[in-house]
Length: 272
Image 1 (cartoon, rainbow, N blue to C red):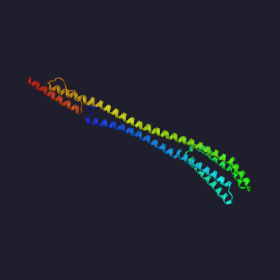
Image 2: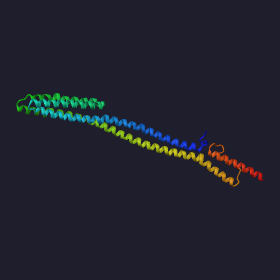
Image 3: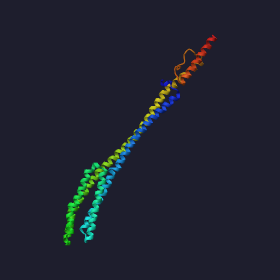
Image 4: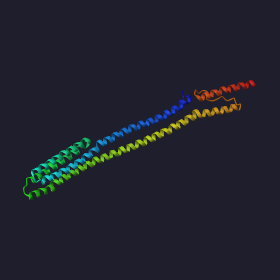
């Protein structure tokens, strides 16, 4: 059955269904895109963002390590020395824990984080350890002063260099985080624009298509029927009524008018 033969209610419903289908497709597209964006933001929060936080905390424990080494250098009693050593070991454990968490958050940066860890332990256990041992074994204040000078000239630069390396790693992860955030924001914007444009375009197309179909299959035939009724009113009975072959409401009107025309023709013949 062609569209022009559909009942009027079916034609209206079909237009509404077409518009609903376009809206549904836009909604599905938006849902898929938003789901991807949500996953991206979740990965960002659980990855790069979390890693930068743990690396920042590791920097704090690196500073605690440096401070504890100074306390170890100036320890006057055995109790003070043990307390300082305990603080150094606690800072080292906390530093390693933060780097492990950062490594788990961003495995792709695992090698750089491992390099940062090795640099830290090399600075503390290889570069700084002999200096602190010599200070603890020195009884002469002058020897302690020399050890403190060595700590500043040898140990401190090694720790500062390690900290700089950690900052470089953190900056790289931060740049990656910012890029991911910008990409997610761009995807969100594109999704919103695409959805609005898609729904707007679909609405325009469906309305345009509906206007065309209604004019072609309803308005024009109804206007033709009105012309026929006017002609019948003027007594013009020669022309047949168009649209009688249709099965919709317009066809029913045309058939009724054609029946009326036949009856008027018959009445005219009988008068003559």
